[in-house]
Image (tube, rainbow, N blue to C red; front, side, top):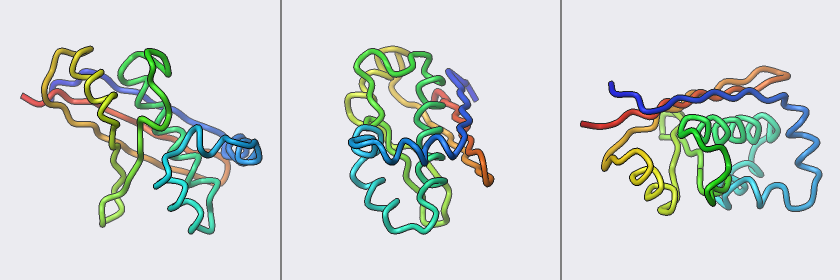
Length: 129
């Protein structure tokens, strides 16, 4: 592995619960697909909290935070059929990564976990050789 970045984020689920009541929060932070999926679930708070943490962990892994015209909706958290989460990036963000790290291929690893009060995400970005 040739790790070019890693990031971690933890969030109190009650913070997301409060934020969900703010007009426009969902559409500013989550993609349409994430919102559609979240609306179907019984435990929406932990679902959104884990995705929020994943997006924060990702921008920490690339070392920018939400600057350089990077937005939350440029990062989408999806799941493989077996449930394993992964990150899907907008074309704009893919181009940004290639330029910033001077690489053509990379792999993003994502791990999510939650408990009653907290959700956490860990991201590793590996340069493919």
